[in-house]
Image 1 (cartoon, one colour):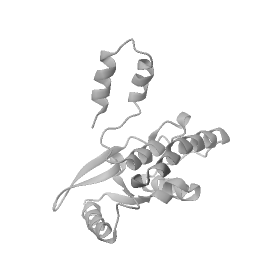
Image 2 (tube, rainbow, N blue to C red):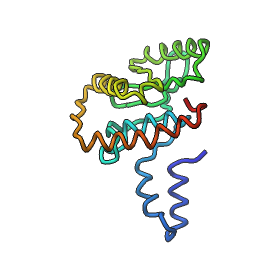
Image 3 (cartoon, rainbow, N blue to C red):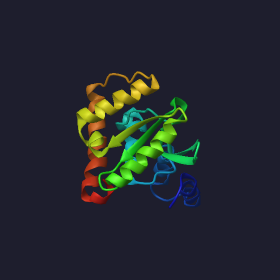
Length: 174
């Protein structure tokens, strides 16, 4: 629907409007290519700066194209430098038939050497499952994720409260 570039052009056309400076500052936090609100939330939780409650694990490419033996396939979120992909598995969008098709697609992607981690809604909303996801990402990337301070834990909790409750109002995003 839109892109970082289109938003930047609009901001350039409105240089003296209220909030434009803040909007320009937020552009550095935006990523192109999300196909769903949950992909966006996943990306935000993992890549926003720590000062905002994110884990600052970026950069992430959304809907990243990988060339497989049977043609191109796309990964919801990819840490390209680490050959790691994350696939969001929404509750309603993944029937048994769709899940089996996704699994075959993931097998093709894995055949290229890319590691794929599946992420479910519960992995984002349940603290212990989110921490397990973060630990899995840390192991897959070989990165050490800094021990969280109380101040960071508070920022992260506030970010999650801002992002995740809105999802519950729109069940189709799950």
